[in-house]
Length: 439
Image 1 (cartoon, one colour):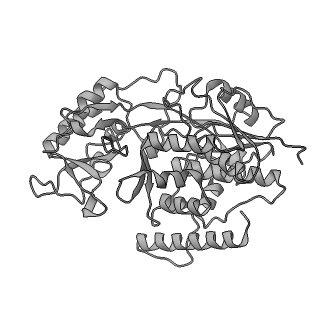
Image 2 (cartoon, helix red, strand yellow; image 1 turned 30 degrees about the vertical axis):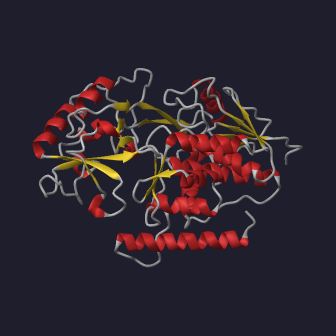
Image 3 (cartoon, helix red, strand yellow; image 1 turned 180 degrees about the vertical axis):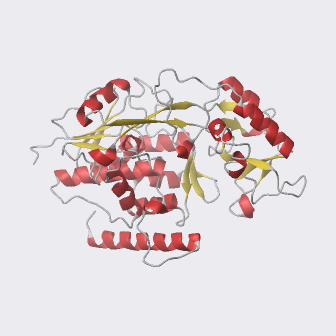
């Protein structure tokens, strides 16, 4: 039981923190949202606005037969502020939801600033006040001083992995005599710029890539790389054809110059509303900047490319949530401490938003003396919460995926049909919960 709660502390103004703050504030509870920018920036951040996104500008597929698409739809049903703003400020990306990162962050900042129940405090937090209720949403780049304090609170149950971001290129510098616009198999709205490669071009590129100089991460002791965001040069070293079966797969395309399927194909995705900059899909990298310019300019169509932003690699830190947190993202041994975002081991923008929503609603329910809100495991959001809170000796970051949902009672061989059935079950269950519960 808590006595006279004046406000809730949300520490971290990223995707999870902003969503959590909004969910608490809409329930009539005061929030202090702490964000260390612009007083201090992490190695990957540069924008002073809240909810800055630093990797891809894509929130992934909107299709319900895609796990992330299903999760987004559930969040729409639950009145997620960030998904609503993303929908309102989307840029063309075929069947995916992508945003102009600058406008997205600006709109979120405006919504948070104008909320009378939220006070933004621009300072670095280095110590958690255990006498107050806190949601720690400081992300995978939590500052060293704060993480030391968090480590004391959680008993040094910490893990690390590394994440990487792809380069961004000016559209006008792409040779459109070589590149062509289109989506795989002609589906979608022809939103991607495609760069075809023949065998000789690909093998020359691959040879330079696997022998390129990378940035040495002297400050880090571990070099664990999360599979979902693997640097392109690491993937290439797994074999000469690995990229051709991964981000450079040419399936579903014909090179207009030859009328035949290219040997390999690089895709570029629109990164802003104006359509002036594009990011290299699947090209997260830790190459030195000079090497990125040299090697990526070998790709046909990018010989004279102007790189607006080079790829970077940075530390991602997450706690062992499977031992520490329950399915509401609250610490199992402390009712005053909740976590949200990638520091919990959820991996991805939408997953981080989902964790912030769950933590925010449950903090509010705790204050309002309502029952905790949990979702069944056959909803995507419930399955993600269950994964995070179920003890696992090999706990690793997790994206939304159909593999974490319970199996269907009947076996369906066709993957898309099976995913559709799982999605239909999830949406139906969510509708029932919303009808029966005053969320």
